[in-house]
Length: 188
Image (cartoon, rainbow, N blue to C red; front, side, top):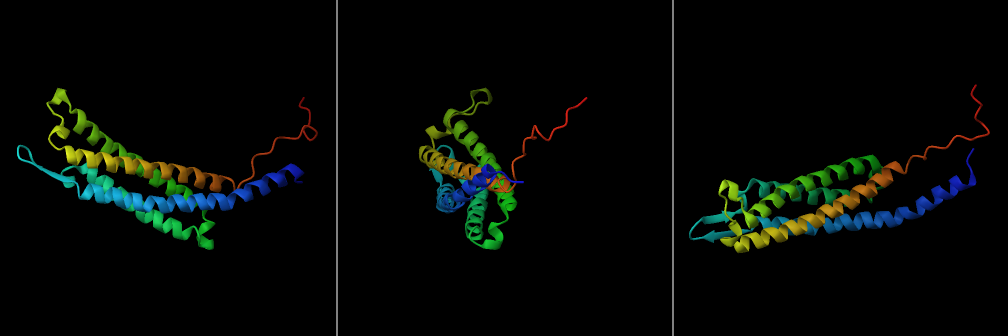
């Protein structure tokens, strides 16, 4: 038997669905150009130095990994944005939940790899005789830092998307009910 308060809770959660769908679609659409700009900044980033030679993104594996993950996240965002408006796919809350979690984790790993590159480029590592590369490759480092900031914004979008998809996936289930005191039998 449902109580009156149970019905009100489900009606209240249904009111949030259009608002969440709007936020969800907006974030997925925002991710696309940010990922494309991240890829463009990274792929076109190169600088030549007369003392140390040419530095480009293909010299660093972490940057190639970030470009790949940015591409995958942009493609996933396009597919997910379109499929979220298709009724048969929009009901697959668990598919979006798992996919958004995977995308967020991949963004974290690629962001961490590039953050390490940026950190070492600016500070070096004196224990292993690495000097600061940004003294010699300033433009390269500046563009790399900008690409990392955009990548972090995309990561934040995917973290919010993961929360929204988790809410959608788990709100399909009723919360566990508390046992009714009247129905409990005294234990002897």
